[in-house]
Image 1: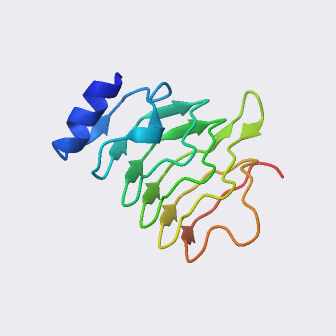
Image 2: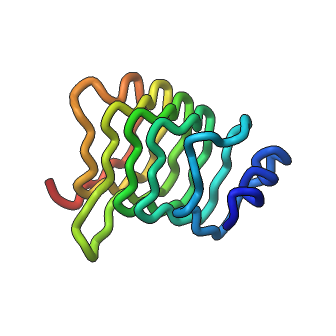
Length: 130
């Protein structure tokens, strides 16, 4: 999916469905809550992204970087954060998940450091290694 098409959908408050969002520039995204369904984020750099209130349903994050991203009040439902083929997870360093809600998570080797996430709700967490 192109940057322009993604921003159109966000501004129209429409969900992004069945899209590869790996090449998106997350550093300067338009204001508005992203709603992604069945999307792929492969080697995506969501570093310092402003994604407060975003919703991710059945999305796959492979080797993604979330460093410093704002996921305040974001919801992740039935998402995967682990690449079984390479046995690599995602990096959540400095990401803010305050008030976030993560359901049916498959985390693998995702790095979540002490103090992160703050006031985040995890439901049915499944790890694949460690």
